[in-house]
Length: 181
Image 1 (cartoon, rainbow, N blue to C red):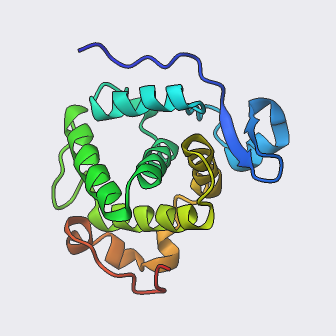
Image 2 (image 1 turned 30 degrees about the horizontal axis):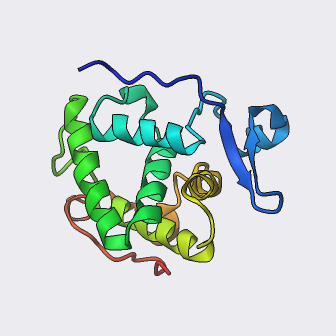
């Protein structure tokens, strides 16, 4: 099966709710603030997003493109088009399959992490409820803008020992520092 090749997507660095427009790489200072890593490239149009999701779901997306921002984009698209439990189920299934397709293993100590996945889907679902009128591409861009630089957000909800536990990797564990809304 041939590998996925992205088609030179513009670099989406966020979504301006006030103007109703995407912020692109050319927006310099904004780009640096939102994406300190200038190599972050994500699809921004509906057709590009469809192509990206297809590659992820078919396990042809290059491992190097399965970044934190790509996880967010995917989860945001699932939350946008499904209810929270369906989105979680699909994310769970597809991440596990993708991990294995790129040589990873989903074990008690590596790979898929149930608690972190549930936490992110809940956060994305909360954002979706705040912005119900946004189309999928706009919502995905907003989600990436809001959370791409917040890789460590789990630290607000969970102690280090809890998130690194086998139990949290294998099953959903409620936050022990503050509740998810």
